[in-house]
Image 1: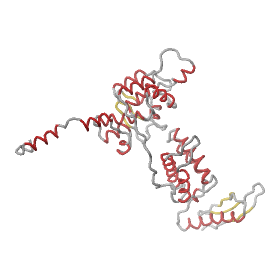
Image 2: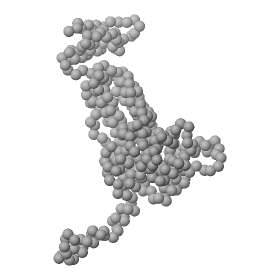
Image 3: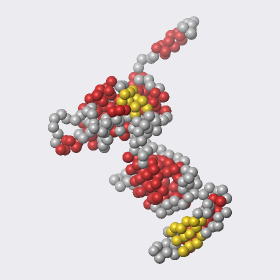
Image 4: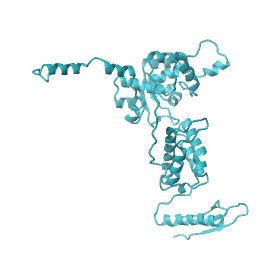
Length: 380
């Protein structure tokens, strides 16, 4: 067994106590304890010695990692897989919420379940800068991001924590906003409001109609693709009447980490044929923020709310009305579970009213006829 070395000493170039200590493999480390007080530095060194003894005894021991450094390493490692928007959300969440609350210089392994519970309780109902409070959906997304970070910390070879104090929290109940029940006439009015005017546009008009919103929205309605997937579609992804959705940065993977073929309707094919070819090979190119265009379109047709992802809901609802089964919905929309596909299907009020108030079906008529004629053959 290698001889253990551990001691504290001063360095004129630093206000902190320095330490020399040995790990379980006998490697000698020399680093700052980040402690100005000798008692705190002694506690820091004793913790390193306890980790060495525990590792030699076969007890799982977490490696020392500063929370600020660990979160930056996590975001940098996941960047090739995440979308740009989600990366910015997680990075801002760590920088503005997690690090100020838990401490940027804190060791990851020192964070306990109680620390996470206090953080979660402080986020629930927290006032937002623009007014209102943080929604339960936002808190759930924060905790999901933290749970994924905790699982990443526990990977063998990294071992920044021996447990995941961020995981297995019961999600808060979320209030789901109703999805507008748009008739075909309303959808056509929305598309007309998004149409780029003909003729030469001034500087302001070129900025306003920078993206072909009508073609993008109409294609989203026909295919159910997400905004990020639409922006990364390439001409080579289309093969005749089939579109192979390969929309992640790594190419070949979708949000659910799968490449999926998607049949194109005649309307979707016509949209692609009418679009001019781009030099970068993309079909639509990177799509910007659609909120301003949708506010204008919603106001033009008298709708209170309109958003890009709505047309993914309309796509799934239309397939369900036409008799698509659960596995067909999953394959068409790229969802991993039937439960997620069910969240996107919404029955139209007109269809429900027709089912409730409509005439009895043929089966119900046969049941009534059989009750009136008991001697009728039940098989026939």
